[in-house]
Image 1 (cartoon, rainbow, N blue to C red):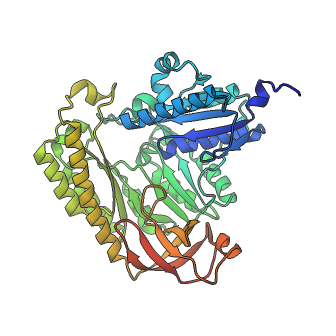
Image 2: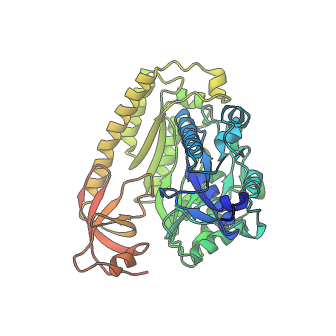
Image 3: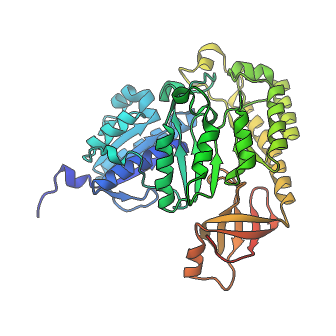
Length: 452
């Protein structure tokens, strides 16, 4: 029997992506390079044997770092048992702690950072090389009808709690022509929904064009044939672009949905966070968004237990959430991250137990708000897209639900639909009528037939 050489052993690859959707895009670019070099890409959720495991890691907060390290050790255990030949690590964790990781886990075959140059080097280490002509192409890991579009890298903000600028560097926008071309290629592959992401999407274009260009970018993306929904995530509230509000209000392809991380409501805490915005300015912005974009659904993220948050500030945060009635809200407890302004200048005085108590109380309030919002939608007719099928239901979303982070609309599969008809609805738009609401999910019935 012919002995397999190193290149043979590395021809099947599983890429495990941890952390945010921005990491997912990086993994998809790497997969396309490997695919073009005749590598077999094994699905992340599959359990079949694989020659090489590549981990794209996260280092945003302590929990994310622990998850990434645990995944590395799991891959090394598989390597020690002979189930995997090679293990490579890239992304934020190795960008931030590469030297320490090399000494701590020498069994890893290579550590690479989070930059574009690291992606090129990693492809070379895997034996694939890097084809620049494929730099805008990706192998999608999402359902084929939606994709994330990363419009910039890094961040110029100096939020006290955030390690991203130290990991990913300064804000660098992707040229608009490249983004439009990438989106065209995605649409040609069947993508119908673009989810626009960056560390700060509203800052897009400052470095290339001398001004914020997110609204013109969205306008150009909306002109691409096949794209029906464009969804905006990670929009910073400070100096929110007026023309973006106008574009969202007037352009039917832009979802009436906005992910706008606010982090807190207390002026004291916001100042310590270095967010460059006050509570009054935040309330005014929310009012403007709701007035000028009727029916908009707002998703925000908050931090509890940040330095400066006492009982009064937390009580104010609860009042703020109760008054603003965010349709979608996520939250996490403050984690002191080395190298950040907060870690170097503040004392983390809130206990972990108290942080968890505050987090639980905040999310309990949000559950009530979410349930009330969902209840208000019972009896309405909405346009949805079907992401998948499970247990006799189409798993759908309207423009008011973003994948992976929001609830779903469960649509009972009609009795006269089976087999091919069921498959035909996946990735298609159709109308449903909502008849029941849970705290986060909705239930609906089909109104019309499949259509593009």
